[in-house]
Length: 222
Image (cartoon, rainbow, N blue to C red; front, side, top):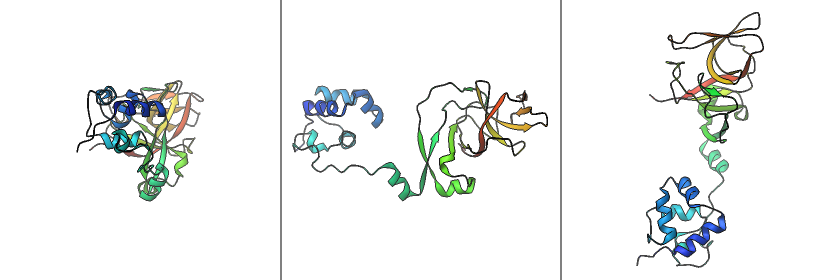
């Protein structure tokens, strides 16, 4: 026997949790029409029903009227931190999605994101504790071939001064964020270099450049 989703119960459950059709669809990476058809009774079921029920903190049996208790048979997922510990992963926060190779802006508002990285890999990259690391997605081609557009860079935010000449650093000059090679001059100024030979070097006077951290690793496409 094939059970049909109870549209009234489905809508009520979304209302109880304060979940909109759009947000539910985004969280499951399905089309909004998939959710709308269930809510309107235009669709009797979905291949995503188990995932939808889990997102609504219940079971397919409740949404189809087989049981009346939304908690019956529902097992809450483990916290992400516990799952990460079991898998040997550590959380690192993003500092700016537009953090670019000369194309991002300090005052750009972005949604904070956390990603999990293998602790073994991070230990090979840096000894800095994860709470002092950040990740960002590089933009542009000024650092090719070292960094490509879309690469994820790992930044050691404990490094606030240029201690390694000609290394890759995340810096802010005025309101512009950059991932560049930096050479600190004796007079306090800095030479800002690109690995792309077609991009000219720039200079920042003493006090114009703020160091975000040193780029210590990357994850990129082949």
